[in-house]
Length: 428
Image (cartoon, rainbow, N blue to C red; front, side):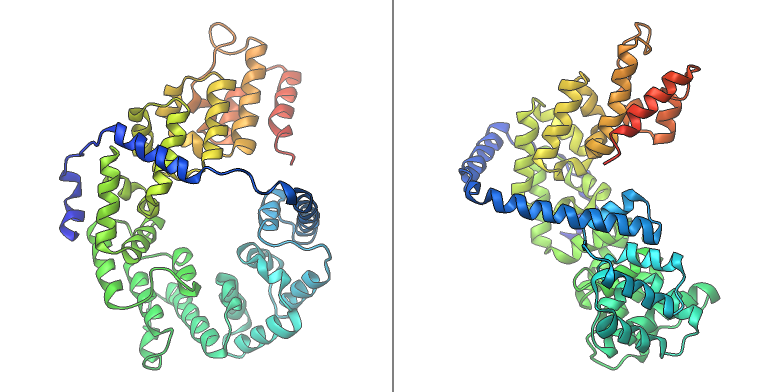
């Protein structure tokens, strides 16, 4: 399999007939066909949903008012943790301040690990901070280390806490002094954390940055366990040409480490039969190989059901592999909006498949409403109502979009109207 990896691009793609694929899709569809059994519990679900929204709304207001976070970021955090009273959260924030953390550090800690807001400040969080502070680092070093990897506070046991804390301290100091101490040499032989820290150090020496390294350190799973398998996987990923400074390197390691050679080969062969260059996609989007055959067939079914041809679907996947992992519901909503409501031809979506990865509510709809308004006023193109290329509308940053379609008009009232249209759909 290893030689297959290294020389995969040389292989020709074998195409299976799409009749077999459609048969597989139909079988899958029949297997999952069922009636809705949940109508009897809708009322209870509605109550639970309202309670959840209440907690989320309070959490958003608290984060904006207390920590100064943006509303968008606060809404994202509220989907991970929410509460309806501020007492416990206030205790957590006050605890951090009492240990010398700045407001900026506290905001970063909560953003990275929002579950701390619901932790018991007195019985759980306080003793951990006191223990770590006793490890000998200065006050500024202590707050820097915890701020860098706040999820350390989610670990239990003084031995585990101290080892991970000391490891992070060594890495941070190494960055400042250009020296590198191999902490794993000081670990007791056979400790549970020994192999993990050893493997993380290997990644560190390869150039994996801290932002990717530290999450692997404190994770319960992931690609940094074991020894022989890890060494073998690292060798493969490096020889495949992945850049250690990128997230793709870690994703590729996760796949090669987590799947057997046989399973990887089976997945690649399955994708080849569907018309995809599996290894080319793996290099662009490593976690592609983690998708099951059922996920792939569901995706095929969705796109064919929307009128895309088999060749168009293969082209989209080859150019933007993540589209095959999007939920069927979101693909239907986004493609339906772009093709049916905006009247862009399907070939525009095929040529720009990345647009299917954008947020419908926060990006696609607001921008398209601006375009519709300009078309209604006959301000676009030679005819006055010409639909611009889909890439011009959706792929650029907000700044570029506003410069091109809103702020380039001399009419102040028109600009104000367009800005209201653009921002109005983002209020929620």
